[in-house]
Image 1 (cartoon, rainbow, N blue to C red):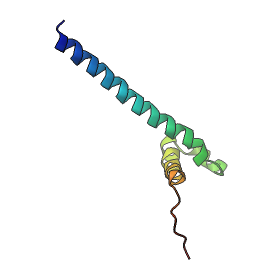
Image 2: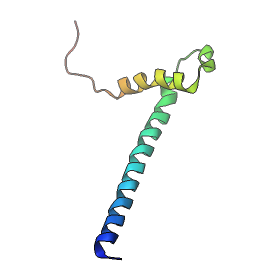
Image 3: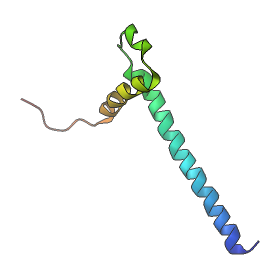
Image 4: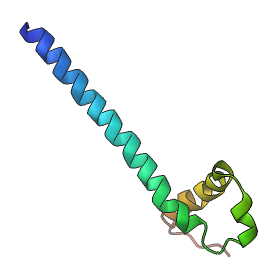
Length: 74
């Protein structure tokens, strides 16, 4: 193989690994935050589908990641 071909294959493999790492990290972050978002949920919620539960837990997860601002209300 030519040097350019080897470099092209290497860069493609590294890009694929990087993309895979990003996707896996996002999925793991969502799945770890999923149970924390369900704390205090009623047993009736167990009948909901996975996507309904996920759509309700994502805002809780995102809100818990926000840093509090320096201003106070009042």
